[in-house]
Amino acid sequence: MAFWKTTAGAVLTASALVLTSCAADPRERASDSPNASPVKHSDDTTATEDSVAVIPSALEFTAETLNGETVHGTGYAGHAAVFWFWAPWCAVCHREAPNLADAAASYGDSVEFLGIAAQDSPDAMRGFVDQYGVSDFPHLNDADAAVWAKFGVTQQPAFAFLSESGELEVVRGTLSPDELDIRISELSG
Picture: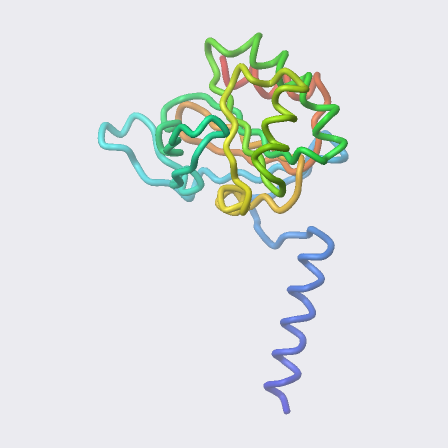
């Protein structure tokens, strides 16, 4: 009987953590934005051959862009990058898209951008990219959310900021244009 009580308690606790988006991950910290919760992932990495940068395990993916090109996540190692997790039907993503387009135009020479779209069809994803003018950077067709899972993203919008040294910070939730600009300017240093 004690086994079932312990098992039921563990299941209930895990369910509560998932439902409340509360994490037991000690790497999480409070954010300046009430809607965003960053998580640093710098300790979950692999060194590159030349040891200049580390490769966070989240970058260990291969996926296809909406244009049919293959992207290897490890190719972003050693580069400053912004990953934006979005869905075509997401109203908040609609509001954020112009901010991302502006940021890519401003910082595109020093920071790489990658959109990671999920939870809809490739046609809807392409329509979103065209409608909101975010075609200046590639977007992955992550319809099954496999890349989202690598980053621990379960809902949109979310961002991941990768430094040249391999430090990865995932921010769950929306960012204001000013918050986005501050985070990207820190990457472009």
